[in-house]
Amino acid sequence: MRAATIGVLLSAALAQSASAYDAYDPANCNGAGEEKRPITVSKVMAHPRVNFVKSPYDDNFTASTCPASTRACRKKDYLLSGDLVLVGAARGDFACVSYQSPLAKRQVWANGWLPAAALAPVPPMPSPKPADWIGAWRHPGGHIEIKSDGGGKLAIEGEMVVPTARDFHNGGFKAQVTPQAATLAFADDGSNYGDGCKVRMERIGAWLLVVDNAGCGGAGVSFLGLYRRGK
Image (cartoon, rainbow, N blue to C red; front, side, top):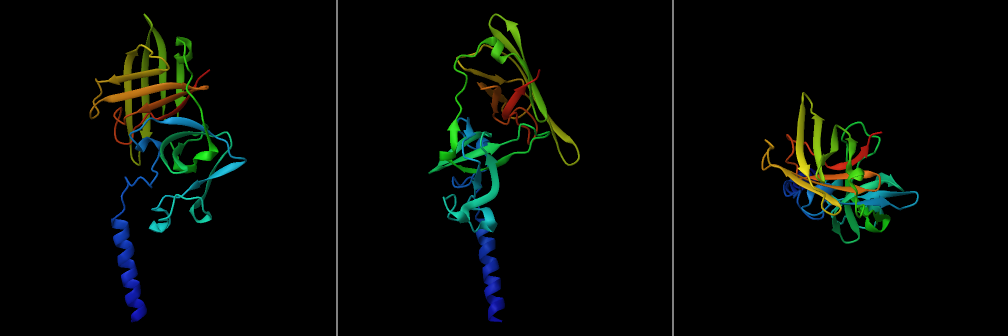
């Protein structure tokens, strides 16, 4: 009877702990795009690999001391040297990152903490020329077309399709933009989604970094990611 009573009390305590879970706890990493701060790009420099680090809610809410540089906080999942990640919030010696394989056929992200010491920032291209923007840029589920529009402006059009269990959600934008320094930033106020669509683009090495406000499509649709230019 005593063991059964202890079991009931333990189950109740775990349920209370789970019910108190706060997705916005700064110790939790839910992906680089979850924080209201600029997203940057970094390259993994660990050799040969670096493991993700747990958040407090991992392991059935028993990883309360994480993120930390301990074996108990180390996940089995890892990234390899040279992988590019999107970087958001920082917490102590750790950075909250999102990673997607450049060979992915659909949008599948790996999110979590990584040791900041294993990351090297990749700066944006300092002064992109129009030709550096122009092209057909591809990303799992979507594409962005950038063309010259005359008068120093660029015509930008994007489409994204995200499959669901029974159907799909889609999104898109159109804009004529004048490049500002190293950035293309615009708002497609003609969007039918929420408060409108806001997008920022930068050239990062051979890639096009796209960050949006999740207002450019239906539920679960985001243009966030690193895009490759088609040949």
